[in-house]
Image (tube, rainbow, N blue to C red; front, top):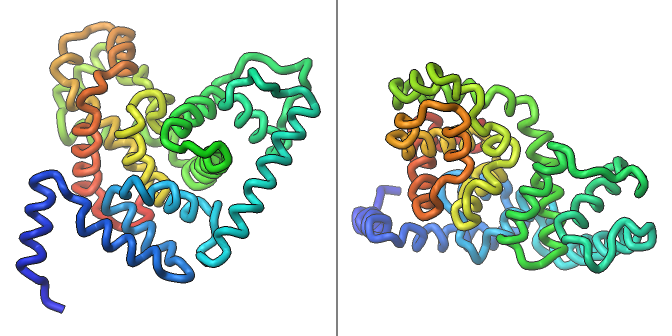
Length: 294
């Protein structure tokens, strides 16, 4: 079918004036009417476009396997998920791991530990280590995105599990990938980071293990997570790249690694939407829009 010039003009106009999602929302609604849902098409859509907020949680649940592709089973499976959540929570309460004053994020952590068969004895509980801190950071961010605690727990659990399963081997290589793309975009800044010793001390854990939870506000973060959940961890590299590019002038004026790290861990939040938009553009520029490109 030949392209419709009027439609293309309209899409370009919508994007220019800030209504980029008008026609994409209609396309997603058509995909969501399929039964069974086509996971490949949903992933491709999520890679190419930001998910409309009203459908985001539902699409995430489908892509993460919390809900099955068959839409007519969603209510039944959702009920099972709620029952399992309540059973795990009740078990933790009976064993006195949690009570009414336990922060919800710590409840989610203990639930995850119990399901993973790594729950420590009550007498052996210590302050969270690095891995658990990553879990808590992602949990705090997810809580800001998702209101329902049952949905929140399952999204946290399945997001983290899928992330480690799919991308665990790739994560250690992301800093080198960032260095490569920075050499393409801003070699002067790369030289400065190397000469000051800051390159090896950048907040890679915050960026690549926490997936920017605690770094970006949730309104920006969820657009990044759309891409991660639909199959790409490479988007994390380009968000980090765009943060460095956007803060170039400030970073070039700092000569101490600890000063750079402190600044990058607390970037101004008023321009993070623009940073994510430019990062996604860079990601498409270097990686195209192939689904599951990592």
